[in-house]
Length: 267
Image (cartoon, rainbow, N blue to C red):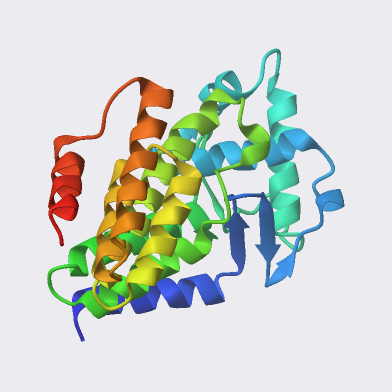
């Protein structure tokens, strides 16, 4: 078994079996033992915010509580933090004995982080699927396709859309958008010859996220030529040209213009 295939299977198994699963794309939802946690269980919005902040900063070393409070709230004191943290423990581990360590939130003194080996998070899984797809790209296209499709299946919308104006969510939101755009385009490229209509659809999904994503227009132009639809390929270029001019006041890249010229020379 290849290393990429093993990683893919382990990631799929973790997604299926994890006792705590957190969804952040398009909405926020937490699952405990495969049961959806209802909003009333959270009691306080600041408890939810604290968990979301830990998710957003999951790749960093354990965060000191003072840094967490500075990043999240103004005029918060030590008691407020303890109440919010206790709320997370109560929701994720309702049967946990008091004064015992959490199974899902790692504590190092007064610093905290999510245990990524025990908590499944959709944005984390999405990134890992794409990494597997990229690594397998030149070795086994079938593994790449499966991995990219798995990442795309996880994308239900932007990261924590109800926190769109919070600075601490912007980095994760932008990174995830770039990752899913790359997954759409790379999968569309893989499928271009065997299924050009699916490539067109995938490229359109990318454009629904970012209408100026020029790679998507080139994919569609190539797919329409494969389908024998030269007029539609040219129309796609024209749409790209209009969008780029409207949004940024620029013209398409040289490679896009070169593709148009090749299409126009087809008789």
